[in-house]
Image 1 (cartoon, helix red, strand yellow):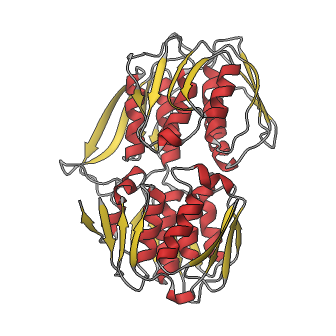
Image 2 (cartoon, one colour):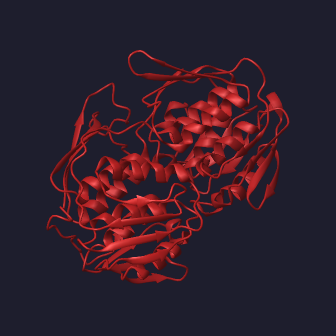
Image 3 (tube, rainbow, N blue to C red):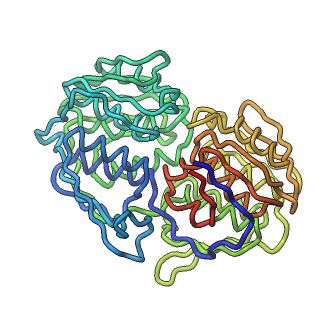
Length: 448
């Protein structure tokens, strides 16, 4: 599917969909846990559905609830109703429950978060489980995670480079392993699975490299809420986790996604038009909340209000200014930061973010190439990107290829609203991975 975005007016108010990171963690805890969990307003996206299907395949019972609800941040289904919740009957690991094995490969689709987190989950069982995914997933290595799982007694088979198809079987025997984490998802996977190892089993994890620390803070917040008795170094370089725990129900709504909010926030910065964002929690630990501090330093006005729910307002009256931004904790912001920087005066350096090259695409290289097609000069570095801003001129129109990367689709679409002419985005269907309906909100012309 291709999308053509023409510069035009756009909605002043956006209700932000639920966080993918929170949705997948909540779903996994509920699916593995003991009892019945009610999850309200989860993200209804391709990635979330990949995780839901995997959880069902591993034995969890999940019932979906849909209703006509104008307050729900998710798009309507074919019946005109929206997903408003899941009821999850957990497997009860740690309470006598066992993982199922269907005998056929479980497909994670395009969801790297699902793949990495469920690899460790599957290692808790005693039957082989095989995972596969789409073409992008087939290029994403789980090598360090698989090495760590092997060190904990798990039998592991994979394609070259630690890629899918991957087959694992337990039991989880524990021990001490060292795992470098260019993506935080490797560590989150171990942290979520280790408490459910058998009683008496101790898992010790050394972490010589860790990117994306805020996502570890998110994972640890769930362990703390569950009362899991782990020990960890303050810098996240070491953890000690005893087995024998069980997860209990955590009912309630899923917080809005700051990663998704960055795109309409970027639109406000790019166009100078005010945008009001609803559905976010000002106190949430999500790392991509830092995007709005970056916008403020570039010259935007950013303000929170609460009446009664939190509303984040972004606007701009003066010019955008370039700057230097360390994206080590927030690599998913690189595409929208690069597009926003195209409209800034002077250079903007996005630094310390080499791990952006191992996402769905090499986002540093792809953004440099695609911005070049739209008249923006960049300098590519091994660990980042310098954008030589065009000021108010921003982007010209043109044709770009997203490579099927959802964040690149949405970043280029956001930038197109301020461009000198229409922007034609190839492989735009991937936007639905995390933000269903985003292109439609922008008035995109969709070409099947």
